Amino acid sequence: MVLSMHIVNNIKTLYAMIVMLGAVGCAPQTEFEVATWHGFKQCAISYTMEDSYDNQFTTALPIFYEHDYPCTFFVTTRWCDRTKWDALRVATTERGCEVGSHTVDHAVYDTLSRERQKQDILDANARINVKLPMYKCNTFAYTDCVVGDTSIISKHYFAARGCHGYVERATPSDYLNISSIMCGANEAVRTLDDFIYAFNTARSSGGWCIFSLYDLDDGKGYSPLSSAVLSESLDYLKQQEKSNSFWVTTFKNAAKYSKERDRAKIEFPKEEIKKERADNNRLIISLEDGLDGDLYDYPLTLRCPLPFGWKDVEVLQNEVVIKSEIKTINGCKYIIFDAVPNGNKKIYLINLG
Image 1: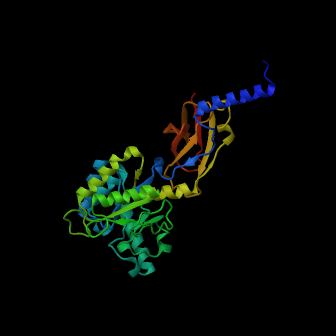
Image 2: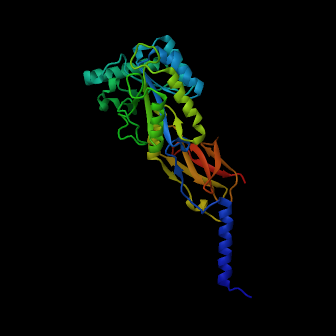
Image 3: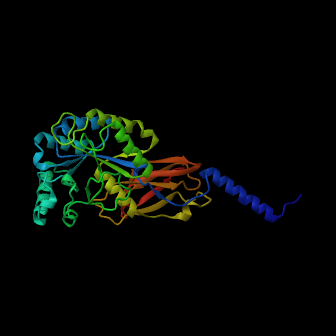
């Protein structure tokens, strides 16, 4: 029996599609995806501490080190002695922690004139810069949850933390008044169950949960939190790591990521990704966000369908190899990697065979 050319061609087309689907594991796609949160985590979690209580350095900081998680210190500069500055230097340079400003001496900004607010900001930043010369402070936490003059705040900080008591959205409506949840004996989050409830709320909403911590244990400062509960909350997050649910990071990093993600623009050769032949062994990608590259330098997590015929990939940015992996998700193979949004630093995907 002789098949018509029409049927033969249809069979050839079907065979080519089967071969292609077998290679990439799914119907060909061409779109890049920017993760809502780093590593395609479901939500972000940030622990912040303010007022520079002794227990934050002697008790809380070792707990964060033990769990290998970073935290954010919003420091009241006049309340930091040499020992605290030394601890902050190690925390920022060796352990990925953040230092933001919480004024010079805990002034409430709505009681100050515009000029005095500005001077307080300058004095606090100058002190931080002297004590931590390798560190750039560009975040702020309001005293007593009272928002200052944001026209002044915005000239010195790109993000500021308030304390509205709810899990923030993945894209805050106001980066100069980002919500946090207050913790300790005088506040809503006191027990492990309270922390877990906040974690689950963040996970289900895909948002950003920021905790405000003060004193600990038997400290005489505001709203002391049990150090055992703090440790148990971090134990819980550590146990959940395989679920890819929680990105535990600093306030600064989450704010940077959120802004960069929402502004990210990707240019890449879609046609090369979906070609039914593997004759192109290099793809050039442009990733930019239009933001100040000196400040907004946190890598975004990207996912791209594996080009047809590719089995192993090397990813480079600015001529430096960056970590990448190939994952199969719902039968589709993807390249996943982190890259800094900067239009002048092209990303290269190289087919290694």
